[in-house]
Picture 1 (spheres, one colour):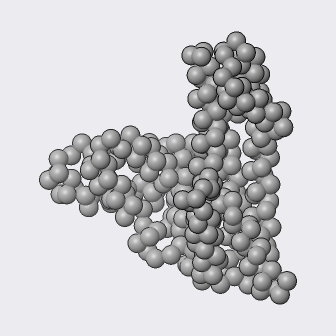
Picture 2 (cartoon, rainbow, N blue to C red):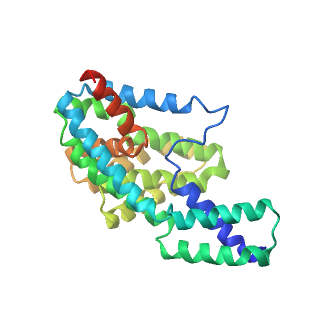
Amino acid sequence: MKRWRPVFALCGVVGLSLVAWRSRAQDEITDNQPLFEEIHLLNFIRELRLTNEQMESLLKVAKDLKEQQQNLMGKRNSPEVRTLLLQIRQGLIEGKNEEELGPLFEQLEMLISREAQPQEVEEKMRHAAQEKAKEAVALLTPQQIVRLVGREEESDFTARFTEVLHAARRHPQARAELLQAFPRYVARLVARGDAKKEETVAKQVRDLMDEALKLSDTEFHQQLSNLQKRLRATVQSAAGSPFALLQSQVEGRMAETLMHPRFAKVLEEKLNYVKGK
């Protein structure tokens, strides 16, 4: 069944890329994971010290985003696609051969190819979250924004930059992934939805990391402070001002929270409790 390997691969990418940020599949080992995640979200809500009115407005933003994300993913989760997947699954259980399963795979490939690629759908979902994060942050007071950002060392790009570089130097096999993930993380935060700026910033950070990883251990430790300064200069230049950088960090953390599939659920439970429902 070599000719169907691309379809198998696509099925895997669809399944993994779109739900990387969602809850893990539940089994006997991970049954407590949802509780850990909900406690983290409830603690996030507690730290902000939201009023009932703020919680109501934030809940509306979270539900609006969830609806947008469901619409983006809806076609891939359509009854037509599900029927085909179930038929293919059963056929594989029954040991059917390529000739018997071929027509089903062809139909599935046609349906999937009509839609945007998984990476494009995920990017649209992140963009929607960033836009909704702007609405959510506008609901907060200055004091709440400070609480949202957290301690300075947690929000400092240079701290994570240094950690990532140390990890990449210790684990060369992970370098390629780290050289993609960290620059993209930084670029998304400071670009605030500007795709062109995001690509530019990601490349600048990636080039800086690549330069750092080519240094010897002695050179790296000698130049680390300068590398950190250059990263800060890159980020601040892209953000435009210290205030804009702070705003990017706040919106980035809010976007991550809004994207969590359980956030609306726990926020609604909390609101109902404080209102005595």
